[in-house]
Image (spheres, rainbow, N blue to C red):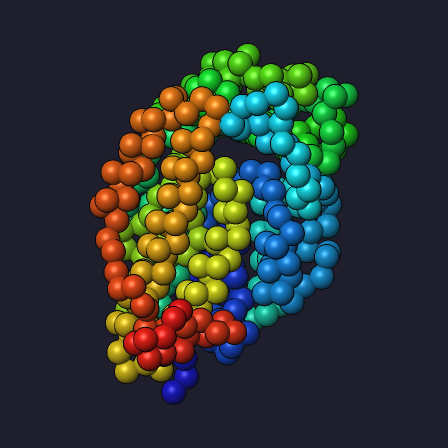
Length: 352
């Protein structure tokens, strides 16, 4: 029997990766690009870059024009001087990465279709609409929000290092882009007023503020708290990337997380087609993502509790712990293991 046609609703990195993986395995895949802005500047660490190249069977031209970074400076727990560490990475507009992945998707056999199609004509719908695709009843782990703006940097700024700093009321993150340009990101608890809150945090900064000469009048706000969709997977629908779970931006691993969800989603769709009980595949996907979110939020609680200004984050720490209590638990041992991009059943005493 021929595999059912797949609809990918959204053209983010995770959605396109699902489309590419399934098309490479012979599934007919249509993709509906949703209306998007050019998107933010993202920092792609070396492990995530390597995973992208492997999944897409691409070469370094995928990252052409990206700004190379070699390290990071973190001033989080206080002390006389920031911590320096090597961290090979690259910074590039996520919109540019998406455009290149769309081109490669089409070359792999994925069809780009208009938005007027009927989802009922498809065997599976992959929900890949990004952060804006929050489902009703989603679990939010806090209320914090972020601000992002372009910046002109001073000669003191290193062109090859990102900088992160805990300040009273929030935290700051600086991404250099070369030629004296950069992007500054801020995260605060609760609602934000970009025109007022970003300058306020910079006034409290001792590490990042001296590196910024001017902040452009292009600031925008975004939700910065982790969030898990209420419905992750059904017998004919699956959420991936930020549509499934969004991470705190301090993790710096949003794209990596999206790629991992894409690998698992493609494996679940394929396994559901050959398993006598497709429901087990659906449950496996949901439990794997809930486990990942639980580990991520626990890490966030620990990191915010160790911030130099931890008192300012106590409300968020309490909110994260309360949401963790509401996160459904599952079996300690899952019935499948992921091996080379495919799900395989294991004995009950096995490990996934």
